[in-house]
Length: 366
Image (tube, rainbow, N blue to C red; front, side):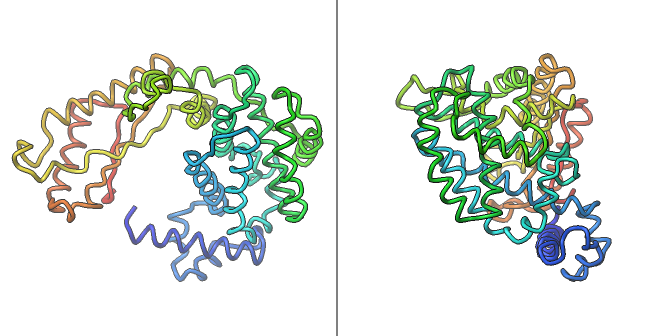
């Protein structure tokens, strides 16, 4: 996507969310949005083939923002870590309260295409539940390992209940959130949430269904992740008992597990994106030239072999999309645009010539 396309995309999203907030989802048309942001209707459809995609993008953005905060989770109890996540989530929602409020009825109807428990939201739900898995596995008072999946399901349901309480009555939300930490602290296990069951039951009633349990595919997802994690490079901690490079811990797995399981549940190849192969080093003493050589071929073969190894564990296998970012900083490192283009073209030729079928390639020119 070019810089211009990215700018148009952001203008379209901003205009759409503003119009949804003012008029509701159903009343808004794509030509309305195009007029608001000063572009042609075809440009809107080029970015978002359906109006629903404009809402899904908001959901995705909120999930990504929450994921990015996981590294900031405080050490402490389940309650303390859960409330930290809720604080982050509410702060993100507050910025988009008007549009989300306008979408509220649709969001709470699982039969609707835009419902947060609808089929189209599965991957986003997996991502958010991964955050709560990190909350549980890293807590100082975490229950027995076999109880944690159920605890994570409860935390996910609880977070939904608190969010919808916040939509309806922010003051009541503040009162309720103040009771969460002590109530979670009193729980003797993941299944004994006492008074919190009242909130959980209201969530189930709101959605007219139970929030689905963690999928059986998670064991298979862990096997895939352990294969991937062999290639991680982590700083060795002072406490060698916490060396996740040698033995990935549950917190390492938790944030990624649900994403991989989402592909497995649909029987689809696991899709990964790798920012790599920008250009050759501009230092002529370190390279043989400006074009790919045996170093790139070995690296590409390694990536393709990794996907094939995953295929031995999970038959649909995996796909890696290589995202070359050479044009982003070429002027800073002294590599010409033409050199980047030539290098990128040669990489794509290597992938085709060597039949590295698990790999694909794109860059800014794409």
